[in-house]
Image 1 (cartoon, rainbow, N blue to C red):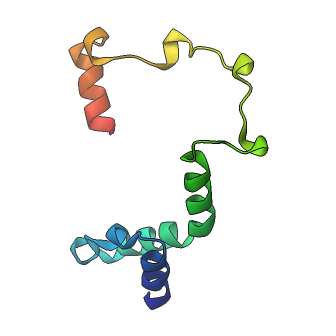
Image 2: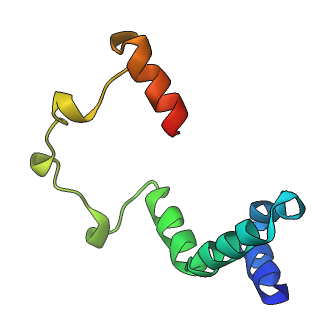
Length: 92
């Protein structure tokens, strides 16, 4: 646990353990496993790369390949019925 805390501190992610003491033992095990599976150096590198004003050649996106999402895979609050919104709240 100490090495995880040190890694989270090194990458400014210590807030991920903010509610650790409120978790059950099973929840702690799952969270620990999830947090250990993350490559924080890679995530940090990708974040920094994505927030620079000048993307590098290897991250350039060909906008001609982008297409709008089909209607059946997205929606909105104003266009969804109460039953669907309730289902989303329960699932989320």
